[in-house]
Length: 74
Image (tube, rainbow, N blue to C red; front, side, top):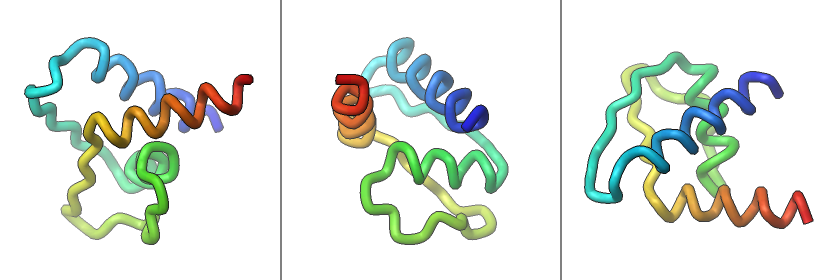
């Protein structure tokens, strides 16, 4: 839960700091990637990442996360 919270805070900072058309590369280990998939990607069928795999979070993923958080807090 602590890792998930830190991942959420980090991703929120990225989306607040950078514009929609900017691409940001984040390199992480499998535990962080699983957390990202679990939190930000709706219906992620495979949580375990492949070696050298890629996970992209775009505005739709981020909006899904924000809506989910808003509904849980209300």
